[in-house]
Length: 215
Image (cartoon, rainbow, N blue to C red; front, side, top):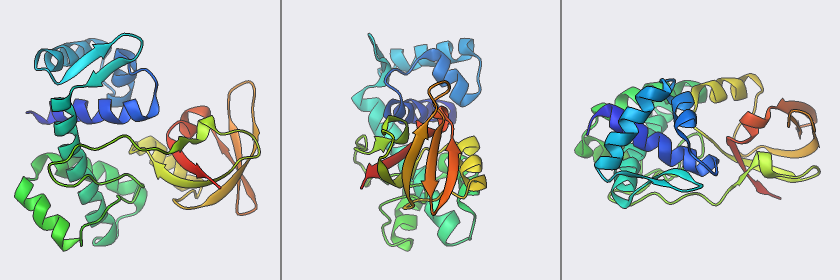
């Protein structure tokens, strides 16, 4: 299993949490790779019985693909906790570092890191850290983009995407903040979220990658 294949499996898992249909174009955009390159790799993953294409839903992971994705997500999120809590990295900076470390880490190292960190359950972005040898289950949170005007929400998770995390940092949005959806622009889907008495404009794309619970 190469780092490239691991990245594809992780991305397909995470995209399926956000989008109703995971397409070649969506994977290419996320990984910043040409659609032709994605087609080639996804074809290999399908032949290896790690990915399937479901009519109307796009690409999904098989049970084997889910196990590998869960393992790499566990490594990634464990490193994010370490970088944030022990090395004092800012939340928006840990994702890119964890992307490198996840592929260079043995199971034994991650097991020891988990003990050292006192068995964390969530990464700093709100993602669940799966237990060893378990398959990560899709979360039950609500996309901010799916909430109605007037809804009061608590921010519970951000998707691990560097551009998103940088934008959220600029807007001073963090986990467990409460807010109210003041309006939604009919033209472009931009949400105005009132947080701590101030309006925050959130694009439709950003809102699809922010997960909340309703108050």
